[in-house]
Length: 275
Image 1 (tube, helix red, strand yellow):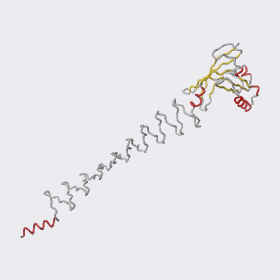
Image 2: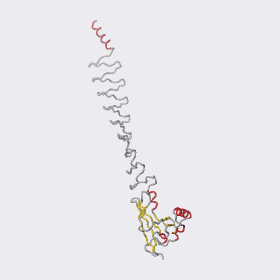
Image 3: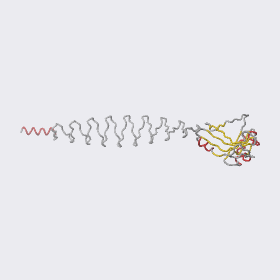
Image 4: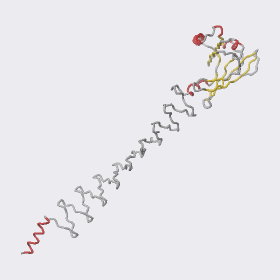
């Protein structure tokens, strides 16, 4: 009788739970501590020996506390997170573009060909020249249109002798613009003392878009205006605008020469006599 009561007392103390042979005791909810003492959570997750606990979706925090994202990306120790395409923001927050180019700290982005916009937004040209600060079209857009054959249509000067039979009595033939070297070559014919001669002059393209051509003739200042055209003759509108320009510069009407009516130099000959 005494032995039976003792066994019943054991059952009452354990509340029906039976200790394992190694002494571990199941919890009232049925969970069983592991031999190393770790206890599974009610949802079945088991803490790791180092104390880390897997998330319900199976992701496991790293020993330093970083947690992989559901898509597998892992934040860096400094908190930066790679993008889904693998790009990694820099510590200063800049993000490389998909083709690998990296914005500068001021936000400027190099072009795929390596050119870098200036802080004012201007973009260097392919040959290294810069557009003007006034946002006008780049030099190549304007000046390369000058290349090709031209004809002298109208000429006017403050000193009419310089254009009637002087050094400025010439006929434009062709212009070759070289943006890379910043030059423009003017090919023309002049007639002096009844002789036609082919000549050329090289002008330097300035940052102000003007082409500066040196002149070897020494004399008092002569203001000269020349109208060039692709065609052979000036029309009424050309004459009207040219005469207005002459009036603005105090050039008398009689100092205007219609060069299309005085052409006497063969276009492809040098040192020839028109007669």
